[in-house]
Image (tube, rainbow, N blue to C red; front, side, top):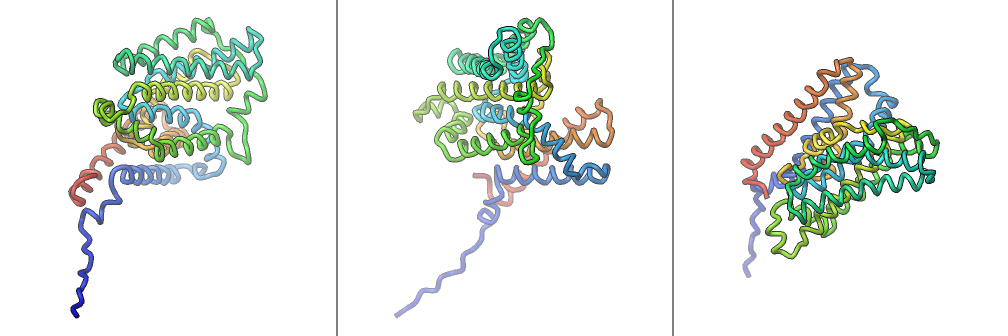
Length: 337
């Protein structure tokens, strides 16, 4: 009777580095970037690593973080939405006008303000998915149109939203944590599960990779694009309600430049502008990096003129290092899967 001797399993470079590819590598790179930024600012300010300061950062995370969820979904499909800042302003204006001038209860007015953003998102999706207008052109036009509507409706004036229940949304705390932060984290958990474990989420990545191939595979590209643009508009409007709650007022000038901050956080988090790649975990880390960076620069009394410059450089460095790491992993691991 002969016995066979099993040869020891050889660990190939591909198997050894398989776990450190794609999204995992991007997340590790982002976390390291975040730690380095925190370490640098901790040496420059004694107040940076305090609970009070972290709570202050948490209060600024909600709006950008929530709107970035919708932007991530849109970018994954290969699109973009430049109208989120204008939609945020519109939702606050609609809410304040309905409450102060129409006598509608504030709760209902806020819901209608939220629905105004949903409608804009749906129209963006319709123009992109059905009419087939380029997403950049569509949402750039929406950015201007919606901002103009906000000015027309409000006559360029700031309207007060001085209501304790409404202000709780942006200023309130639960167990010491800002309400907006709790809502943001809850939304991330929900959408991470959707993107990771549902057919809908997998379809979005497929559409971003190749819309034509997705259609041939039986995926309703039009329906999925309508959904993601509608969600993006809704989340942008919700972010606008939080801004109005924090300020206890609405203004047509609110959230100017929000779209660029959100896109920066999303791309910093590893979402590809070409579509088909990105995770909400990466987006969340990207949001944290940008907010902590702003906070640290303010604490170290660096002029606001330089803050945009530093933010852009950090984005370039983070994405650049990520690409270098991906290329090194490709060589060591035999290519990405």
